[in-house]
Length: 260
Image (tube, one colour):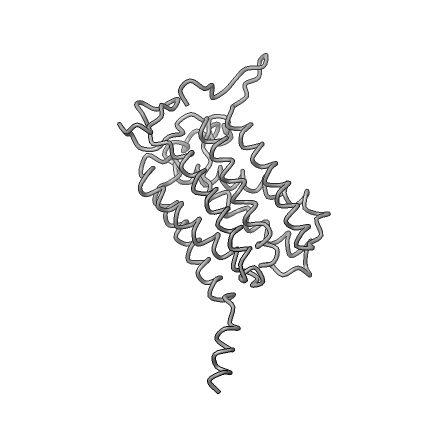
């Protein structure tokens, strides 16, 4: 972002501002998730190891997805594959690999805990961390903005010409609102229905992410615009299936009993 350094030097070492921002967001999400799991009476002893595995697999998956969707740039230049300091992480690639690793480890370390009980505690923390990460991470990286704009809210970003739609700030606000909405749902009678928080988080986040990609980033995205949109819709669809499977049926049973 113009006026704010995207990196700084400490001797011969170069540190990128967005990396520190993402690290802060990850730590906040970790602490918050651990607190929610403890409140849900889930054993948190293996959670540190679980988080490390998720972070590593998420970074690897995000990098591999970026390489796959920008193959013309990376093909024939294997040195670019590991140049993560130059940017190039596709969020859905990270989510996909981390999801697989997370499911395997959850089954190994929490075999007695119902999956949706585990994810209901985890999803709001992940969304809160994502909201903070969008503001402290991509907001201060090279090429961090969206489409060109002449509107008052446009921001100049390093590496991009002209004022840009501040997509990281918008996405941070969207995710923060979703987090607050999920906390609100937890205060209703739906809090006793396991899986609803997970499903609502998947539906809303998936749809909003797909729309952001379509309307604010489009083909200017470096992470495969069409792929991101499809992944967002797939996540939302999976959320719909989860919601249908876990929606409380007590009202329907009650009505049937009354009619009888």
